[in-house]
Length: 441
Image: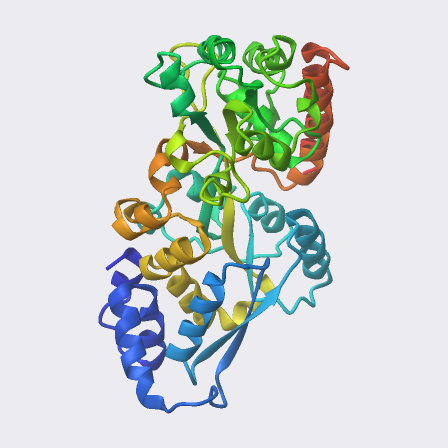
């Protein structure tokens, strides 16, 4: 029994029973009771909830929603409103709707960088008294940090993502290496030897384009060199540590380890080079591992690849991965349905549903316990291989104006990577530009 269900043990009223749906035992009990309410379509009087989320071609979400609606017939019914697949387009549409105060969305399944932006404008509900610190202990730390803003909790983590360091174990072994590099300098020397020994085209590929993927990649270099962007509302990006991280990132190109075109590489270009067998090391997201099993999309097989923590600038530094993933948030205009909405969020957040979503749709769970679940580990090997990265994630700067900050960082990080400006110039410009943006908050 998880924290959600335990909090409601012993409450047997209609709504109390409904809210038990959050845990495995509660879901089973709830399904049994509601099974006696009759079959067919949902009966009149059920509270309708609209969930907004991107398409899920794998089908896991629809399976879970069908199960919830079947078990809660006559009480609560959830409709899925499919939003644009692009996170940026989804955000723009959602922001416009929430600003108008007439959005039909009750539950927003949104990107990890949205809570602060929506919370600062009063668009979403404070869930601090529901998703308590005691409950949060069951979750990975990074995702729970991402739903915090000014000491309050504005969401519940649903599934997660993290920047991961892929490496070709077969190539390393042939060149006499038994483990992956710990520092970027070690990575460079190992890549050089493998390329000399075996003729591999590139040593390393990553995301350097002027987009959100490039921002996260650059932030990882800054973090892993000991730097950061914000300290509260104060901008601290212009530091020796940040400069060390970005100079190292630039050196990946100038030293010939990464291709010259890296400044334009998105996740797709770097993934294609790696799965084509042209690369020794790669920084990318967990989805790439799933592509290795398809002979039509990959010349590299799962048994030839492992995943580790991203290298750091120097010995003693801590490796951090950029946090991705999605959370449940509640439209402030839907407060009159909060009990039913919360029952739905509990249900979706429970181990059984997170396991289904992981197995069916390859979405990494946010509950710690599921990283010991054999079915999840068997069906989603990246949950096992990438666990170190998942346990050491950091959210992007938490600010109500993150979207504006991201655009500024994307431009300066990309210019520094391509050598159009020096790292020092880029950081000085960001120090001024980000502080001006932060002050607007």
